[in-house]
Length: 263
Image 1 (tube, one colour):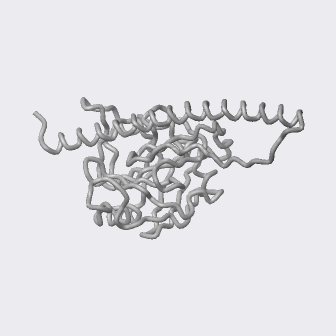
Image 2 (cartoon, helix red, strand yellow):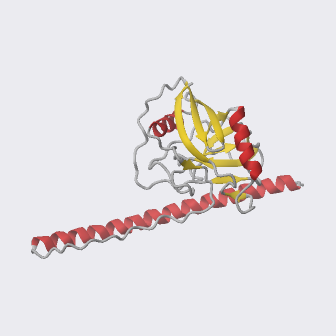
Image 3 (cartoon, one colour):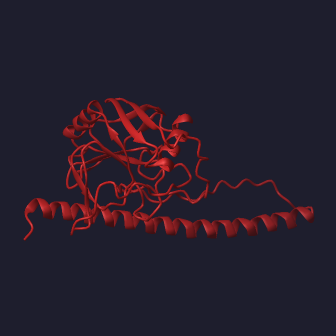
């Protein structure tokens, strides 16, 4: 017989997985829409070429744009359909790296092991070198069922990403899943967000401030230092904007500068 805490965690995980499924479905719809738009544009281009050939081309300007996928409170980012390649591997795979986040609520230092998560570390290094994380907001705080602060989205609404995805790594690091299909992500863990599908990580990541049970499908790639963990705990203590258990943190967290360097 499950107790109230186990039931609450189970409900939180089920909500987490439903949200990811909705995000995956939204991505599929967006892809179908983009195919339709591309087909229409091809017809327009052909028609324009024919008009130009006959001397009848006009100078009209069309500003119609495809709508972005609907945002939600999902922890899963919406990966780009652009098909951009993952950054070329340039890091030392045998080295340790540190991601330093200077935030509006305090500094967070994250130790990363390139040997265990080379693609993840390499991607973060490439993005940080381009100042990708500078002046971005940590858009989501969850204080019920799971205990995470999510960051890394340049749009600040949970739908942004770098235009490419990276493969899952280090998924066995937290042990074998229990009967409920979950493992414990210890407080201080930093892991990749994804859409619920394999190998769909982008730039979004979550900071675990209290032991959290989740499926072992989120790449754990780093560990916060004590000061960073205390910073995130203070943000969590202030709660979620609007008083719910999941949403934008009441204490706005802005990553003013993000860097990745060899430790």
